[in-house]
Amino acid sequence: MRAPVAVPAANLLTKADFSKPPRLSGKRREQDFQVAGEEGKIDPMYQFTIKPLFGSAQWEVAGVNIAFTNSALWMMIATIVLILFVRAGTKQDLIPGRWQMAVESLTGFIENMVEANIGKEGRKYVPYVFTLFTFILFANLLGLMPLGIVGIHPFTFTSHFTVTGILAILSFSIVLAVGFWKHGLKFFGLFVPHGTPLVMTPLIAPIEFISFMVRPFSLALRLFVAMMAGHLLLEVLASFVVSGGLGGVGTGLIVSLPSMLLMIAICALEILVAGIQAYVFALLTSLYINDAENLH
Image (cartoon, rainbow, N blue to C red; front, side, top):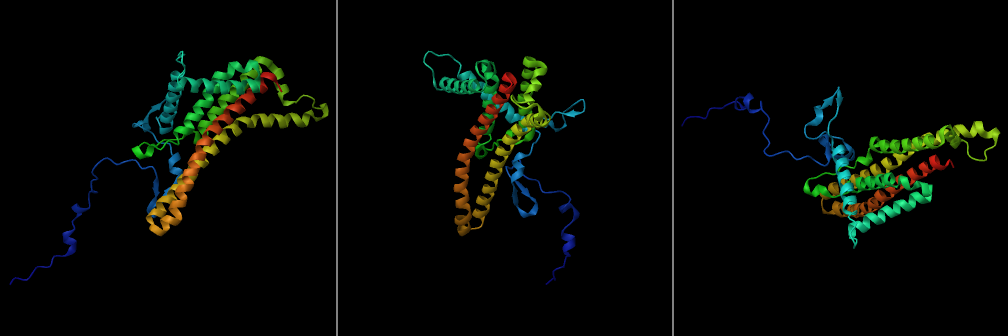
């Protein structure tokens, strides 16, 4: 009987076996969570990552990148939803439908708020305040939609300070334009409250000026922090649910179940926060416009 020939293992594994990586079948699905390295930890900050879409990462105009990102996409979606909402509610039917009643009620709510803060002359600002309120509201609510179950991952662009900062600067610019257009140089009287003693003016005026200039920063920071904190908390709780479920039945009951119940409660709270933050942004905008209109 012929003895078997021993073949070295090194000869069995040639260079061709490892020169090419294995091909993955199917299209790679974009993950909602980013796995951090080999430890397998969920990165809660990954949900705020801005990513270019449709191969637009290299789009440039005059050396400036103009990539169409997920943030821009959801801004567009929020704008379309706002237009459809208003369009459906302004049909002027003899018997108002649900959409028309909803739009009229929301418009009346904003009109009453603006009139209470500015007065009768504040009615001309209702379209802007209404648009600002509904845009922020829809942006916040769209970011909470559970669309991940169908492979669509919402992006809450109000959780970025760049976006909230632009909205705040827009409102602040209107305040400055109205103030100087209506009062001219007398607008600087806003920094000296009525009844301030002349001796105290050098002290009060700089304080009022600093307080006035901080307004757009605080307006943007409030919305940004509120939305980011809520989404971070939900992501952390979601990681507890997943980690507890992978740890077995006992760990799941101790960790996953309470985390899931807390997530449900926080989701309900986040819906409330979405409306409150939109209202606060619109309310402070109307108060700042009142200062420009009436100078205290």
